[in-house]
Image (cartoon, rainbow, N blue to C red; front, top):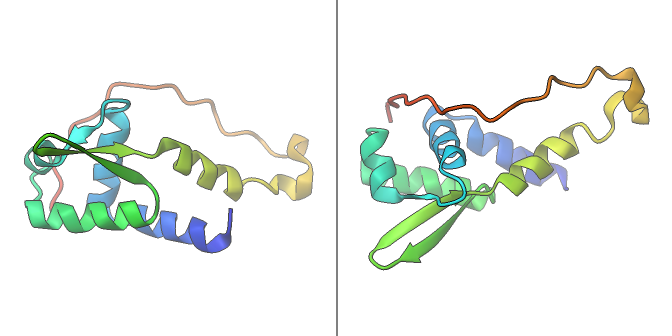
Length: 117
């Protein structure tokens, strides 16, 4: 993965609303979530949400699928995995036994939080 791709993905997530949207979409995998539901549940005006989703989509972190009159968004978890893998690819100069691995994470129930746009 190229450095500019990593930077774009991290920059897209480095904003409170976009991070909340992405986390919400990760929690909604694999079904995804309709844009209207995201806007309502996260208390984000629809036009503001659209702008944030566009940034996440340009970074390859979300995808959209039209289902009838709804647009359903899904998190590109594989893209985030690629970004994090690229960040630690050269861990400890190619000697991963020297690095303390991060603690294993488990899926847990999502927290609902309101976001200010």
